[in-house]
Image 1 (tube, rainbow, N blue to C red):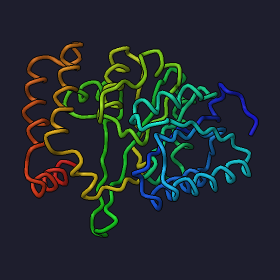
Image 2 (image 1 turned 180 degrees about the vertical axis):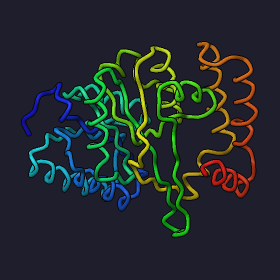
Image 3 (image 1 turned 90 degrees about the vertical axis):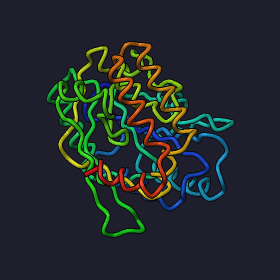
Image 4 (image 1 turned 135 degrees about the horizontal axis):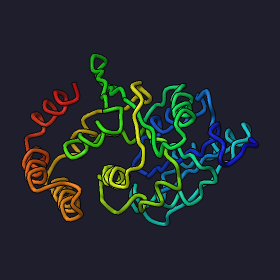
Length: 281
């Protein structure tokens, strides 16, 4: 697919996958990329450590599919599992296009996700990043379906960022140079994206969200419960300490986040699920 690397009609796709990913979800995520009304000009897949045979087989097949569609497929491999932030940084270095769309390895992208996103970059050439809403679903509960809406305009994003993550990471498309100019993703486990948004806001780069659902996200018990427990609490405290030390949040915001966000990590799992369902309304 021949296209200008600075064209607002072209973009690089970026995804990281690790051996713990469920094969069926991975396949559906890839299928949703092939279903885009505006396909990527290239696709970068980071294998974060050795993968199981099922995932390897899927990757061999999708590599052929990308080739058949004349989409440049770039595979990057970590010898050991290094985590999402490290992997996305590594993959980003291989991107040949100005715009980079972040794809999750287990989420289903709406067919018009990139068509809608690219329109925003064309309307405002100063934009550094565009995200949007998600629909959360539980494959084991057909009745569960919630929309996670995020603030749209820059000022509302800036006002809300100290309390809650104002972007759905799986929906974002950004300019490579803007992300790298603020230091890109850093080693802040579970909060790599959230910390990056703080740096973008602090640098006064233009970021927005579209008031549309761009991605369907699987939210089951595993998704909810892995965000709880003492280990996650330690990572939450590390993140809040980092924000406070860089003066991204003040003391009152720091204390609030430690008590409310941090304290909730230690609640019983049944209560955590109830709270999570309530706050996503």
